[in-house]
Length: 264
Picture 1 (tube, rainbow, N blue to C red):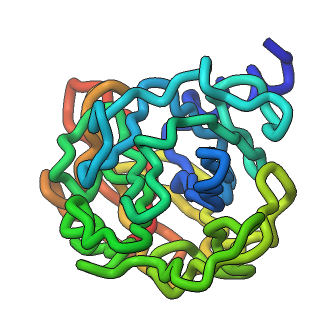
Picture 2: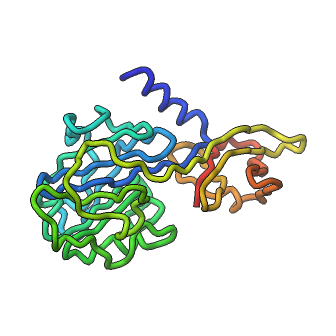
Picture 3: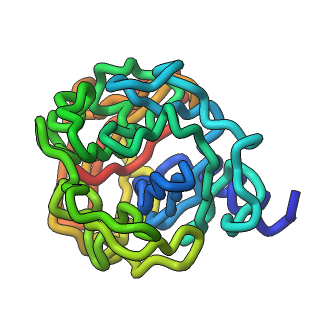
């Protein structure tokens, strides 16, 4: 593995307080059954064991994302680790990406297919009314129930694409345009969530200071180890915000936890 890419992934794990990942479905070319993912976040994302979803007519409904389906010609990375701005293109099957209509979701390895927290991204197109759209519509919503990208005017050589500057969280964020699979997409308006300082206070509590330029809210979450689900620290102990860019909280006594910041 390239040492620079390995180091980036290692830092991603060791600095457990991290910016949120932001892998989006940036293009779907139904004519060639190709799907393009882009990492528009600020950290590396390993999508090993993630799952695709098409409950409308996919078979199987939840295949694992596989490195064997990576199209090396159109991808900017050879494996399932996406560094910021990297592109992965997958060759899927026409039955999984039917031209008339379907849905496509990208799920985390765990968390349940009915869980919005496990659903990374989602789109719906054509005559499909969707199945997992009801999950994608749960807050924070990344789609609308029964909303599908209009393909009535699609022409040969065109694909479904995220609009320039859009976040991909709504049917209105996508359009049909000449296919650009594997080409650099206009970047989503960049949101930065960056840790600037971490330390302890005399009473044993922890503080995290950060930079953030988004319009949402920032919360601190924790996990007993990297394989279990993260939960908000505020469910266990009080969380103070003496400054807009500073969070203070008490770690659990006698236990080891991983902490991270998340945007809501």
